[in-house]
Image 1: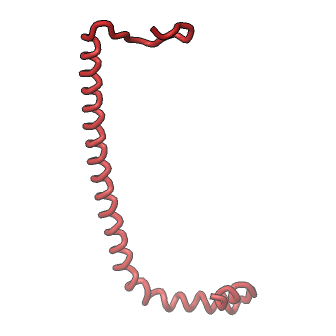
Image 2 (image 1 turned 90 degrees about the vertical axis):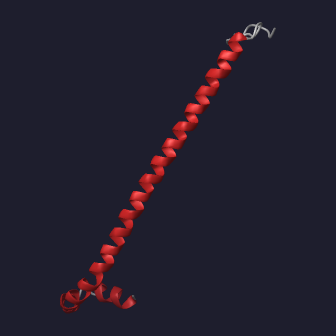
Image 3 (image 1 turned 90 degrees about the horizontal axis):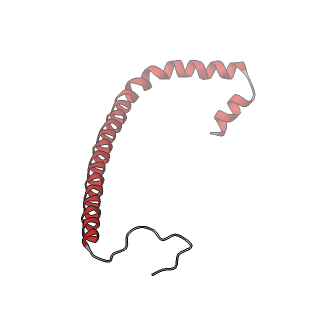
Length: 99
């Protein structure tokens, strides 16, 4: 890597031209090799994205079910406490002592 760093430090135009021409010659060979690799990586990313969306949707549904169950239990326990005689509902104010 030091060779590449040293190549661009000097500001030599011949070195820059050599690198540019070298890339122009090598690029047609490299592009057909890298294209299938790039397609494979993109396909894997799309599959992972779809699986992630599905997992989040399932998690959202399960969370909604749990929240619904918790609200139903709260409603049931609230109805049960309303039926109990002598049960005090509401908050105490700061100035009052506990009964």
